[in-house]
Image 1 (cartoon, one colour):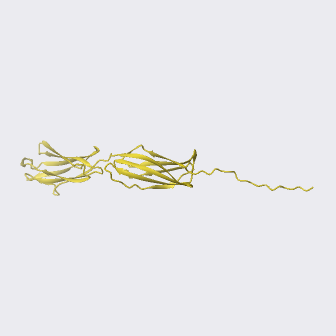
Image 2: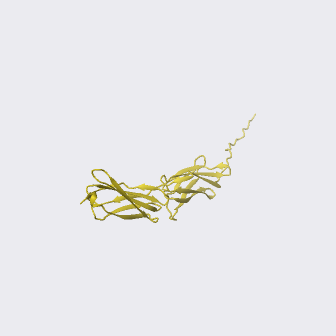
Length: 230
C-alpha cells in the first residue's frame, strides 16, 4: 500500500495594514503662566478607530506676544509608540500672547496634520535696580541724580520712587514719593533728582523703587542707603 503525504502550506495570519488618516493634538495645561513657560503636547495618530504606531512625528509652534512680536520655539520630533502616541514638552513660552501647535504625522500615504491653540498669561514681574553715588553719600543742598533701571518683556507701565530720611539721634523720619509713567517701554532708565536738607546732616537716606508692567505685575528694587554729609 502506498501512502501519499500531501504537502502542507503554513500560511501567516492576515494582518490589517493601518495608515494614519487623522491626528489628534492635546495640550496641557489649558492656560500657561509666563513664569513657568512650559506646555505639554500629546499627539495621537489614528486610522479610523485604530491607533497607529511607529509613524514619525514633527511638532512645530507659531507663537507671538500681544505686541505682535514672533518668538521662535524649539520644535519636537519623534515617533508614535505602541499606543499610537507621541508626547513631549515645549519650553520658552514666557511672553503674554497666543500660539498654535502643529503636529505633522508622516504616514505611509503622506503627511497628516493636527493643530491646537494655546494662550500664555503674563505673570512675570519687571526687573528693577537703583544706581546711586558710588561714594554712598549725598551732600546737602545739592541735587543728586539717582537712576532707576527697569525692564519687562511686555512693557513697563509705571515706576514709583521713594526716599525716607531718618534724622539722628531721635529717629524721626520723612518720606517722599514720585511717580513716572513709562509708556510701555521694554527697557528704560529713569533719573530722579534727590536733594538733602542741611537739617539732615548725619542722617541716612534710604532709596526705594517699585515698578509695574502692563499686565499689573509689580516688583521692587533692592533699596540702597546713603549718608547725608555737609
